[in-house]
Length: 386
Image 1 (spheres, rainbow, N blue to C red):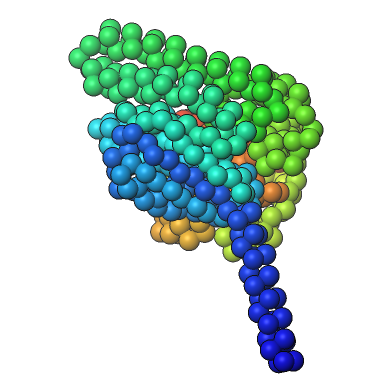
Image 2 (cartoon, rainbow, N blue to C red):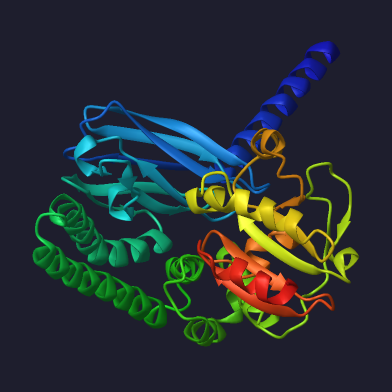
């Protein structure tokens, strides 16, 4: 009897431990599902970042227009599913436009059960329910996605006829701009009217990243968000960008920082570069203008090697991918990796486009900031260093 009692108690403890683990798993897991008219594909794909900044790439299988996907997350995360339905893809002769209206977009938090309702035509006219954040997101996305889709369709039309009919192409440009301006206005109205909504906070973060809102307006909106949202990861991203706006103004001394997010894992201190001009280049192998300008960076590093230091800050690539790209081409200046927290240099420097370049003087003062590819940054270096 004693042995039986101990064995039963042991089984009970195992059962209780198993139940507790299942409850914890359910709390850290979200699910997203939908039965969507027109979702005539066998699979979709998704990609998002985990808490460590690692990319999670996954396949979402579809059967008879129905899908369900579950995964573990430990914080609110914006996730998209690409439907792999050809008519939603905005293809050009050389590639495609990554239209947001061609994605299933939602906000997932641990424990969420998200359900999409709608249809797929030449865009994803389907929106999420299941939480307050997704209800709010569906309001703004259902308002702007048809307009975004129309804008991209006009852009494709323009690409087809602009050589043969410049006048019609110019008229299409006006229509595209009007649509895009209206989308931006709707986003800003949504944010200012719903400043404590997680969806609105995410949209402000996204607009700042894409340079769709002025720094001044973004800071003003951010100051009105209730401090009870400080724990939200999207709020933290905006907070870092706002600080970046303030600390990377032209004429300000660049904040010193230390990091081991280097290719060799060794500690790097920005203050070690004092005494020379520094060109900071934010780049990624996925960014065509960044890659196009790399030979020019190498040329200028060698041209002014006594006066200039080039510092690359990569976003979106692994160490292995960076090394595979830079070593054969001898792009052998110092490279950092933008990561999470204090190592998120994209947020710290308020980078909203790639490439972005900063020119720093020998005392550490910011002289210039250039967003996008072009010759202006190299012209400025020639004027400073000749």
